[in-house]
Length: 280
Image (cartoon, rainbow, N blue to C red):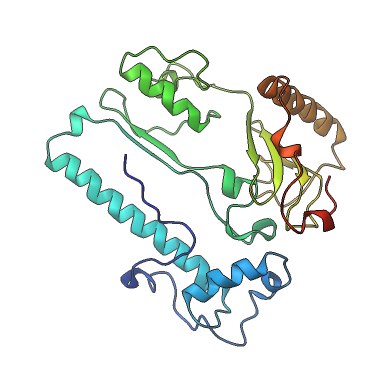
């Protein structure tokens, strides 16, 4: 198991990478691309991140370029690891899985330089699998979740998974024996906001229980990911029938997960500002 902390806030790639995707003056006083950030309640936290990058950073594109540079740095280091596997003669005896715990937002939905929502920028992560006995070069379009990796590995090792283990083996997808896996997937965000989402291949529903430091967040969001993959148009009011259908599925999923236990996302949030922010 190799954990590359980059890319992650604070975005500080090695010096030789910092100009790879940026040229200009990151502290240009005429650049106002970060002005919106300054009006957010989360700004004091963001300001600390900006200060770590340099003095008086004003250019949003500079911050994004540092994030991109960290991705490139991680790619290069992963390449070193894969070349070592080749040089040691282990290629035909080694399964490799590359993934991430979350993505980062660069201003989408007013989330800057962090992973504070359940929109696609955060919730959709890479999953790349190479196995000596699986033909490569294919992109699988099925909906999967990260906890599917564990039963997949158990099957490789011919070990029976423990009772109650969540997830389904990905091996039928990897072998090309199936093209479907789940008809819907679910996730929670309980750190910066209290939100929960479900998505099908086409639709995504987000329910906000407590907006945290984003007081303007809508309580309900609905996106047609086929037509609007960047989640820029909230269709909740235009398509109430879809909202009702997905909310029912979401609530049934939550009940199935919790049983008689309380919903942790509905436990009063302990942030000092929580009482001043209306929830949903």
